[in-house]
Image (cartoon, rainbow, N blue to C red; front, side, top):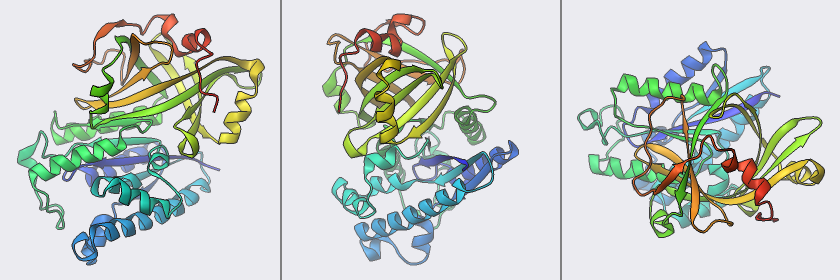
Length: 369
């Protein structure tokens, strides 16, 4: 069975998603990777005469979701059975995009008909790359000519861009590709991020970690592009697999389970390999108590700020501090922290602030269910 990697290209109107879909597909195939494209369906549906105006907004997005859901299932099953090691499915918008166009109640109602939910969908993709609309930062290039069913003004395009960014905030790997450069360079920055995620030339994880003052929770909860994700993770050293981490991300039947194997290159750089596991497999690992070297729970606040994705972790054993992490493409990549963060110091190179060290020190603070 082939390893299937599901990547979503999303963003506001006139962001370059369709052009990007072709470029990413071509570049990955040049690297010998099998690619399956899932093209945006909303435009096709409207060109056929089915629109939110004549069907009603709820009925239109319900139909769109159902069609996309079935196509995704079909192409995922096809990809899994291809005679190759790795397959990338590229989506021009994913199932969650329609949430930006309907109310929470409406989305919950029609997603439940397919026996799924917003949280499950958000965690079902491996990576999401958000291309910012030209209406935000490249206004002179914003136009309606490239899509005959597009009707959004610049102001509406900006609003939809933020709405879309907000619904995807909290996905395990989100990157924002803004308009701070030319469009050609924007696409190249996208490719850098895609290659880094896929692991070309190798699957490196380059992170910086900061100790910060305990955040203003009211402020966090009022940031539209901020989402809380409950996490429990355990570290094991087993005779068969060596050092690994298992993680429960989410709560109840909305949770997903991930196994990660890391190989340290330096204090800031690691080779990382991740795979989804079942709840049963997760619990089987937890039962290997003789091999568990640490376990911990935390609330992770995923935040998009100034076109950058941050992960802020709040722990049950600290009431005066928290940690903030940012993932980079290179060790020398410039960065800056959100202006609402009160920095204590960088702890990237301090072993005591590694998650494993915290898990070993504060292991009693974890959710057992």
